[in-house]
Length: 392
Image (tube, rainbow, N blue to C red):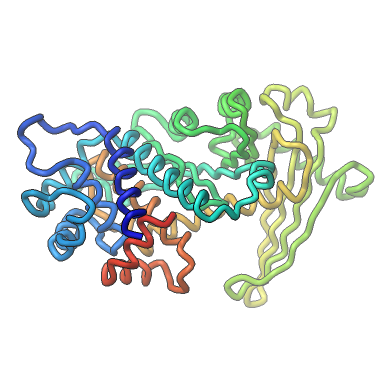
C-alpha cells in the first residue's frame, strides 16, 4: 500500500509540474506543488478557504510531509490565497483532471473488472450549465459576482472543465470557449435554452459529439413548430406518426412524479428550419407531472437532437442533465460555495474547481455517510483521507 501510494504521489507531482509558478524565481519560500497538495488535501478534509487550509496544515504537517516538501513549515493563509489567485485556472484544472485520470487508470489496471467494449459502446453524457459564485462580489459592486459555465460528466460524476463568464461577453461565449477545452468526441452534450445556438451545434458536430438542446422562446419559430408537431401527433396517435415514447412513475422527496418522453425524426415540414442546425436529426418532448399535497404541477419541454430517435437514450440524457443542478446544491450546502467570500477571479475559479473535484472523490467513495460526514472523517482520520485522495 505504501509503495503504491508513493507511486501515486509521484504522478501527482508529474501532473502538477505543468502548472506554471507565477512567483519571482529565487524569491519563493514554499514549493508550488506542496502548496497545491496542501490545498487539495485540506479541502477534502473539511477546510474551506485559505485560513482553514492553513489550520489544517499546521495540525497535519507530519502527515503532509510524507507526500510533499515543507522545508519552512506550512505557508500562511495569505500565501495560499495569493498563489491560488495567481496560477492560471486552465492549467490547474488540467493538472487535476490528468491526476484523476492517472489514478483511475491505475485502479482499473489493478482491478481488471471493467468490460471496456461495453463501456465504449455507450455515449458519455456531459451536462453544460452555469453557476454564479454569489459570495464573490465586492462591496463596491454587488452585481459583479463571478459566473462560471462548467461541463459535468454525469455518469462518472466528474467536472471536465469550467470557464468564467466574462462581464464583457456572455454565457454563450463561455460555452464556446469551454467546448475548446474538453474533448466532445463520442459524447452527448445537453444544454439549456441559452446554449441552444447554431454556432454551438456546429462546433459540437464538427468535433465529433452530439447534442440535445432545450428549445424555448429564444427560438420562437422552432419552439412553436416542435410544440405544434407534438400536439398533432398526440391527437393522431404516436406510433402512427413514428414517435417513440416512454413513461416513468415514481416518488421523490414526498412527491409523486410522472415523466413522459417522446422523440421522433424531424418531420419533412420542419427540415428547412432545422437544416440550419448542424447534425440535427430528431426532435423531443419531455412532460413532467408532479403531485404534492394535492397540488399538481405540469412542465412541458421541447428539444432538438443530433442523435437518432432513441427514446431510452433521450430520457436518460434529459433526466441526467439535472445532476449538474444537484452538483450546485452540493457546492452550496457541503462547501458553502455561495457564502465563500473569495473575490479574486483566479482564486474563485480555482477554489470552485477544487470543490467540484473533491465532490467527485467523495461521491465515488462507497462509505455509507453523507458528503459532509465524509469530509469531517477525512479531517479526523488520515487513513480515510488517503483512501479518498489515492483510490479514484
